[in-house]
Image (cartoon, rainbow, N blue to C red):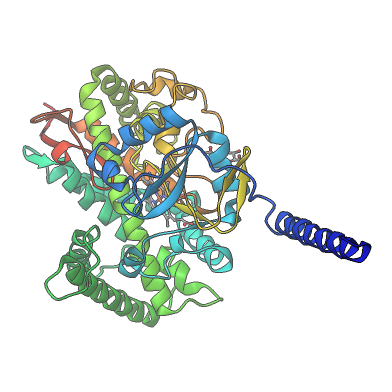
Length: 466
Ligand code: HEM
Ligand SMILES: *[C@@H]1O[C@H](CO)[C@@H](O)[C@H](O)[C@H]1NC(C)=O
């Protein structure tokens, strides 16, 4: 080999290594996280992933067994999507609060179509914060204050209709929470189309978990038709409202009064969205409370005494409950908190990483779903000793940050939490002071779909106290 060849060869080799190093450097600079490992866990079979397992067993057992096996951050595959489940308070804080901008809300396209693409919970950024401001304005404590006595009338009327009857608690609670939702959205004005609205809404919800096949005859098709009708009903209410001159303090008023101007379609999507967010959630919590009170006589006794005290205080004054009264219910409030913890009706929520994110040495890759597991956080013995025990007294001490998030946290946390608590307190006031009830049939089953509920919606028999 002569010198020239040797020289050329060396040049060639150094060129190659330079190229190699350069590419390595480029890779390092452009995607700094690529070297990080994925969280532990198994992805299951491709496509089907572990969905089948998730749906074939109690989802809480599915999550809990995974958390036990892999720790508080793990990877899995559900509904064809790779995802990361998180169940530590620190991770929940990262995803929901401190790095919320990197984790966008995500829903199946069929759900977006069904509720309305412009509804608040599908959005992020400017449009989301504008909507959120308007929703919060209608549901903040100052605004709720004005409707406490109207909520009370609905509660009294609802309970009266159950007197001496056997009822399905969940079904009846849904009627109550629906009526309260309509009150908070449309105010007290007689809504001409109230029954029509309910009828369409019930059809819509029947198809909510159906296969998204839009062909005549399918549940999905019927739902989409009902959704269209709902849009028309809201449009009609809007046009009537426009002819009235005075301001309204309800949610519709908040949406309409905004200077930035929402389109009619945006308003309709959000009104239907709020009904969706408000009704079944609050009704399932109420159903669980009725069950836990029936199972824990000493707790029921304490709640009843607290509520009777409020009745005694009001003797001689105007009878309607006020927001100030609802502030004098610490025991009842702890029962609500403990129910929200034990039942954890929203077991988890969904986000999607908008870019690669590093967390505790692991990579959460762009495009992956991220599921904060509220229920596992609420049932961790580290956060709540003897987690399966129903014990309202544990809330005599405030829980640590991000260990108790029944209403979520951060930019998408529940703007309706105050209304939910008030309507629950008001109903419990009348339920415990005037009625007794007993649970009928098997008492330990739980059904999932999608919220955890006592089996068969908790059939009870209710009668006036004598
Ligand atoms: C006890 C009953 C309720 C529970 C447990 C509950 C729970 C939640 C949770 C956990 C979230 C956040 C979800 C996430 O971060 O992905 C949420 C969001 C929301 N909730 Fe509630 N909620 C309840 C009642 C209500 C009520 C009564 C209303 C309306 C008046 C309401 C309206 C909303 C809305 C509009 C959002 C979306 C907020 C956003 O994306 O910015 N909720 N709720
Ligand atoms: C939400 O997150 C903030 C910041 O970490 C925390 O201070 C607050 O307590 C959290 N809220 C709940 C309900 O845990």
